[in-house]
Structures are given as structure tokens and as C-alpha cells.
Length: 199
Image (cartoon, rainbow, N blue to C red; front, side):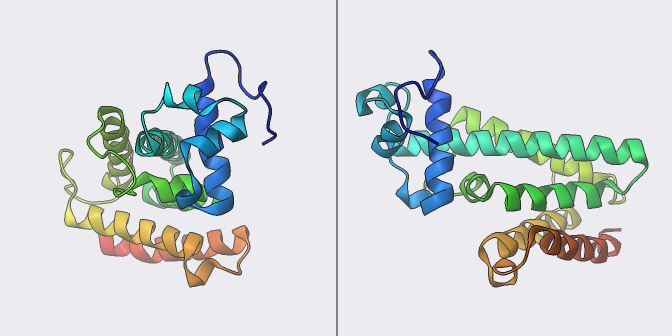
């Protein structure tokens, strides 16, 4: 991302600041993100940034909301494509989850970082609930007698296993040296091994 006052189109400064969060967090980690640093990267004054986000936590909440929304959309696409092809929806949703984490590590790290976001923010909560519904949409098709209103123990097992694997591949020792195809192959094997335990 290049610096300059022509970084964003008129009226899109809020979104441009979120792009700056992605850039900074991907390069230096979420702890390096500040409103001032994002404003500088976009090419506006700090006061302009503060008109959109009251503080760093509000900025990171909006960023986490964007991450949850994009992952939910990825889940929806994966689930629909699996249904169209007659594939196992859990495998598709699980692999899409892992691939999203590998491709967008800053988004993945920000989504559930409760110490850096306002977890009761209405838009954040709505995005989290939307993601949960898509996850259930993938998991429930595999699990017998799934409750549409709440996560079953099997669904929580599935989510925690997939999320844990994604975390290990993004920030843990098993993914530090591997290529993306190697990581996705590992994820595919793990998810396929997990599927029988969910029935």
C-alpha cells in the first residue's frame, strides 16, 4: 500500500482505514496497529481517522467484523458448492475455514481477539452470529440430529478442531515451514479423519 492523500475515494475513508489495519497487522502484528499509523498509511490526518473510529479498539472491532463477515461469505460459498457437487459439506466448510486463515492471517487473528475488540458491539455480534449459522450449516449436514438453535457437542468438537488446526498452521510450529499446498493437504487429511467422529 502506497502512501498518499489519494489513497481512498471520497466517502470511503472508513474502509481505507480498515485496509490499512490489514496491511499493518499482516506486516507487524495487531499490536502495531494504531489509528495514527493507519491514518499516516492512508495519507490523512489523525483527526480525520478519529471522526470514523473513536479509538483503536473501535477500529479493531470494525476490522474483526469485516473478517467475520468475509469468512461467513466464504463458508456460504463453500457449503453451497459442496451441496451442488454432492460433496461432504463439513469437509468443504472446514477446508474453506483453514484456507481463509492461511490466506488472511491478520483477519483470522482479529476475529476472536476479545481483549482488542468491543465484543458487545451490535455489528460485531451480528457478524459473529452470521458466521456461526454458516458453520452450523456445514456441520449440521454431517451430524445426525443436529439442533438448529444451538451448537451440539459434536459441532463444537468440529469447530474447535478446525479452528485449532488453522491456528497451528498460521501461528504454530506445524505450519511455520510448509507451503500452502502442504498445509491444505494436512488440513484435508485431518478433516477427513475427524468426520467419522461426528456421526
